[in-house]
Image (tube, rainbow, N blue to C red; front, side):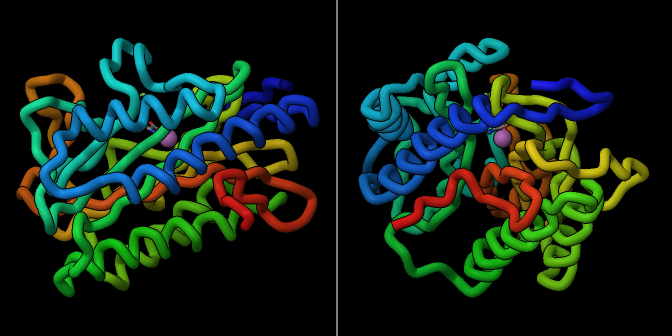
Length: 257
Ligand code: MF3
Ligand code: CO
């Protein structure tokens, strides 16, 4: 890799490894929601995630990261991100469940997340939240083009949130990714003073909007990890990794069928 001020450009050999790690993370993100059923504990979901990660040949990229104590992050309803699995936390029909999955495969990192409603049948507000958070992610990814700035990604994401009247979480942002889980640059989900570096081929970004049905404000629980909305409103989180190329952005955590 070449470390530039504020960002990292990965070599073709590294990109080959990152591609495989991203694919492994994407496989777990695809399979796990189909195995989740109402009545399961979040610990049981975390254990399933651990087995799916092991089946890829990788290990959890989150377990032990700054002391993080679980395989993946499982965040329910008003939990925004970094929810920790617990034996006594039961998932119910109608819960909005976010699964954030990081895989370390041969020293390369894949990171992606999805949110869905357990048992289907979302209310119109939940539907608006889920559809637009994922739409914002896709709009952001389209801007991951050589010559653009990080802020172009941020602006595309924020535009979708505004038109859907959703709160954009400000304390947590997307990031470079590939050799380490979190690499420079940061990728905010809103426009701010930071324009960020200009994008060049070989940059790998994890883009991850976190939107709330209510206020953008969040706080961290006493477990020091779980982030919740301040007003108790429901939150959603979608994440993909994207490679900046000479041409179209390549979504590394997209499973081509
Ligand atoms: N995918 C998240 C992120 O990109 C979660 C990682 S936090 C961890 O920041 F501590 F659980 F690893
Ligand atoms: Co991430």
